[in-house]
Length: 310
Image (tube, rainbow, N blue to C red; front, side, top):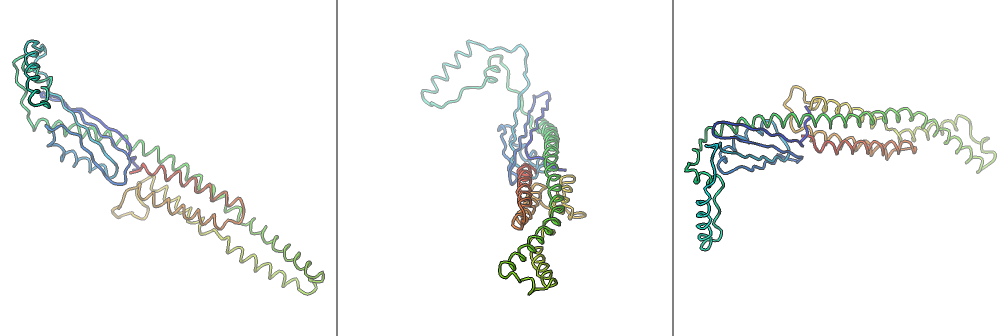
């Protein structure tokens, strides 16, 4: 299955003690880079979340945000303004001695105003909530990565069809190009003989002339022979189709696949680009040159899409 490295997933879990919200954001990266943003009270769940993440994500930059909220102990809780003024006065006096003294949180003020104690922090309950939220968020993240991966795969398949069409067209043109060159060689030899000596044709037999034309044509055929390049391009497009449909290399059947689909695609496009370059260097006609350029454009479009594949 082809998956994109760019996606988002979030989930929320609740209990009598409060609620937990977790978000996963992933973008493309060569390696797996995990960045946690957790409150200190829930730092103990970092290892648990990391363990769950690496089971489903192998590559990409991942940002994990986790927030939590305690349940309110009283619905009619209100601030005591006299107490609030007293605390503000004490805070101002404290800051004259220690300037960076932090202000109390709103929950602390509310608890003091209503003579309530902060709820007991039960780490087991909060860990269970974090685990539940992480499982749901990762499921949503994977679904989003697969949907985006399918869109990227569809775009690459369209480019692959374009490459196959170009290969077909070049194969059709090759016999005509060879025949055209044979005619050019024949005319050039005749013109050369006539320029050297009007009686040139009397000094060379038709068999010798035909043999010379055949020799030059053979040399030209070897020089412009791109059958191997076209065959390799067909093989690469077949491998591409297999990768996009299964996420695994065709030659890795029955073996544990090594490396990500994105990295295998990147290598495959390097090979395809090499064949397109060779095709361009052997070009014997403007149409072949245009074909090589169009092949490179299509390969580059696919390579850009593959940068986001896991």
